[in-house]
Image (cartoon, rainbow, N blue to C red):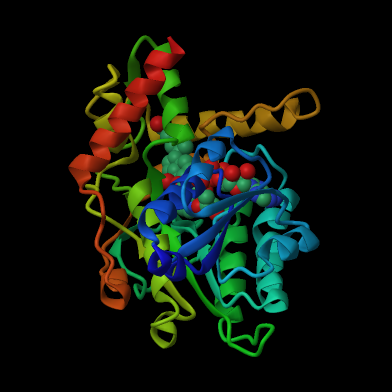
Length: 369
Ligand SMILES: NC(=O)C1=CN([C@@H]2O[C@H](COP(=O)(O)OP(=O)(O)OC[C@H]3O[C@@H](n4cnc5c(N)ncnc54)[C@H](O)[C@@H]3O)[C@@H](O)[C@H]2O)C=CC1
Ligand SMILES: C[C@@H](CO)CCC[C@@H](C)[C@H]1CC[C@H]2[C@@H]3[C@H](O)CC4=CC(=O)CC[C@]4(C)[C@H]3CC[C@]12C
């Protein structure tokens, strides 16, 4: 018992710990990081589920705070050994202004870095995104690429721009001296499109299908491949990176890693049908029912309507020129860098990831009825 208590010595902070990915990271840390003494969960909105975590041997501290407020971040971080920074504004639908996206994603990340330096927190794991690379504004395909594949990463949309800037800040901060004289060790993880329990966009698409009489209409050619990764495996990668950063600082510091697993390469819509099919939805058409130019016209109309209605209400449908371009551009990764650098293997097989996601969809579904 005394040995166990002694082994529990580390303090972790997870920003955005109540979000879709953040919750999985929090739960994974509690299950798979035996050296944890205290887990701090920092988020703008705290979930009531946190209460159920407070009964174990690890001290769970919920902190309601805003990453854009430097003093709040520094106060939360004092005494922490590791910070996993997943907090972010994920908005490709025009819900938030570009300024707000920048403030949360870029200034928020800068605040986390400065807080590390100020308080002496030596290890920083940043949740970046595949969007830092692409798809780019030219719609160039990225086919089974890895971290070293050349690609023209040029963006205009506020979300990928903010993630790219924030990632750059994190990587440049690697090696900075933190309070106490030790070097900061940072690295960035780039998930592709994450799916799994808690995935709100999947729920939105499901409800759209229900409104259309249990049908979805194919809009994207089946040949366009989209990278997807299960949330449990993304969380596992964060936990592993955080664990290994100290021992492998020279190798891993300042590095980027795509998050990958054994999820199949499919189009965005065909992949979603792996879960929506067993929930009773049908994807109509083997080829897109509307030509691309017409879809783009509808997407542009949506953007125009959003702009016109903005003074009155928030109109933010799934389809806009950016999301259409995203869904219609091949972007898949094939890499083993995480395996080579820190021994990552997916914790959940594709079959398990699929089953867990379906069970979550079905459970949610029965609650909703
Ligand atoms: N969902 C996806 O497919 C992907 C997400 N990512 C990245 O993963 C991270 C987590 O994304 P999700 O879990 O999907 O999003 P999410 O929206 O579910 O979670 C983000 C969390 O950050 C919190 N947050 C937002 N603004 C904050 C602020 N100012 N201060 C403190 N907390 C704040 C939110 O309350 C939320 O709990 C983000 O950084 C995102 O860019 C990367 C690749 C793919
Ligand atoms: C055109 C529609 C016809 O069915 C489908 C529209 C789907 C879009 C809403 C999604 C297509 C690709 C998604 C993005 C992608 O998975 C990569 C992402 C990475 C992130 O860091 C955040 C989320 C997202 C931007 C994700 C958002 C939803 C799509 C654009």
